[in-house]
Length: 105
Image (cartoon, rainbow, N blue to C red; front, side, top):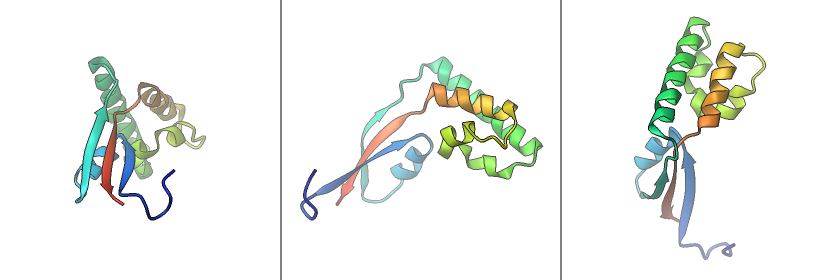
């Protein structure tokens, strides 16, 4: 650990949809990116995402619009129907891309 006040930069690991947000931040540079999913997994993930959003709208659950920011928490919610949580669980199993950003300290 670098003593306080001596760090010259800050590293931030970002996963999933937040990567796009971090990529637009001024003074931040992406230094690494990985998406271990195979193309078929990316397609499955996107299909499941669309299904979850569609189900959420049909059940009047607007809080699901941002569910990807908390995949694991959403998968474990007991107040949601299994038709949603089973899909979100599979999405969490598939995973998301990750990136590392650096900025000034």
